[in-house]
Length: 312
Image (cartoon, rainbow, N blue to C red):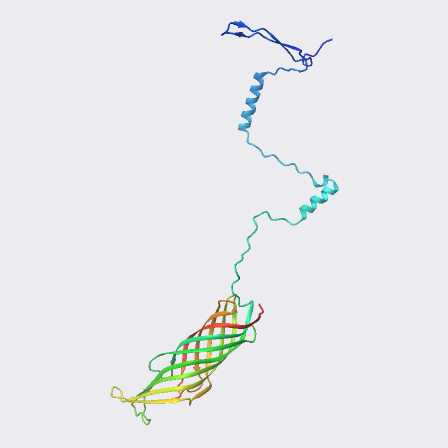
């Protein structure tokens, strides 16, 4: 019976004698018993050649990422399929870095809460002139005002303003008059208590800024009036006379007020305002019934009291 040489275990392997050149002797053959091992002698040269080819091919061929095998959902068991569908349809979770909360305080707002009552301290330079003005002088005003908010856009303002009005007027007297073609001039220095009653309408409102228009009437209470009268021929010596009057002239709603207001919120209860204005006479002002007109800019610091909810 024929036997397969690959399936037969080699029981004895005889190690050939090795000659030692230095000691000049022949080593006795040794018998190694490996009766239980199956020895297959590989071809060393072919293995090295195949390994070399594999290394060359690996260096030349670009690496490909392993493709992940996706199992169809329909092929999964019923319970597993339900879990996968629930995870797929569920809300997506963010993997990005969570956003940092901004702990900065919100800026002051006109729309969050509006004060029912606002107290204002104001100061205003102005230029007062008459219909026969000679030259211009700067007058001054300082006062306290109160504003009540009727609605978010409409409010009413009143108060008291202490004013010093510096103005002059003059001309040449005509024939048949007191001055008889002589030049004349009046210099006025008057202390006036101005009591306004204005209606305000806010037509533009942003988070911390608002713009409005204001109109109304003022009553002038002439506390003290000083006048200097200059009369005489033109180019010649003039006569100077003085007149002082106290608490004699009152002009109830004798002046019309028009202004444009700009207000900037500093805090929710404090704001700063700028208000260009003009005051137009509806009647004669003072002892000489001068048509007194004033133009200026008011600056105010406003404090809100009794805040209430406002409509946005």
